[in-house]
Length: 342
Image 1 (cartoon, rainbow, N blue to C red):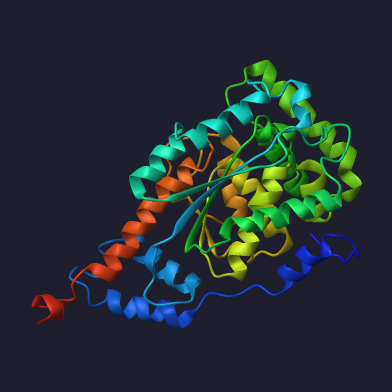
Image 2: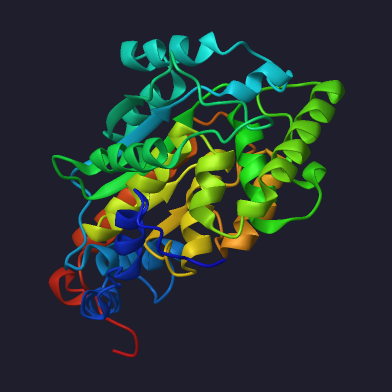
């Protein structure tokens, strides 16, 4: 994939992508040094040890902390729903946003359990993106502005960002992005989503095939893939991930749709997602394939396929535990416990 200057609204995004902050090796080294002194056999907490180190390295600070975690759920509607690709009508997107705001959704309960802040972003639900089988989903100005809006997810400060989405029809959009970026067959990238039947799967694969064929001449540029085949919630999630990198905020990516948004940045720069972890692998079949493309090993693999940042919020609980273990466990010296070979 190439990144070419256009003199158009995407230029600001391209500029941000050129100068990404790196992890802080000094913070990581401090983490390793303290970990060796904690009252446990070396390596006995497994991946929890590397998680704490990862948080410190990407926060660029020691000790690591997760005191202001934010779960951001972006909601958008899609013109491609007219192709019969979804099991639910488009109005369910707005209804679920109201459910999030009223505290009744699954993600609300997970956030309550782990003391996570929740932000819900509505993205012009009354004005769905255009049907990608007939037109580009968005024009460049709309897509760039939506990415900029997504950057507001970290406004006010946070030290961990969990991104997720809600949008009837958006697993078709995720499949189109993946097919546009990686090729293969449309059938490789589509799945049941919220529960379409075999005929629904055929309609999804057909819509993805027609959309990618329509826009094929423009798909060498990942940002064009996003604007032509994507949706507003995916553009906003890509913007949120990019903003987090500029402010040294580690990110947990939720399921298939969130990962497809992240894939756009990864296609622009292979190291663009180094500050991100894959929270889980969803039951949507293509998600596992996509995570391999992104080089990400999921923290959780629970057969979930809900979306709405539910997997990311669950993984945030583990990340908080990892940081608290690192910071608050006693050392051999402070606890008066004999260390190895003493």
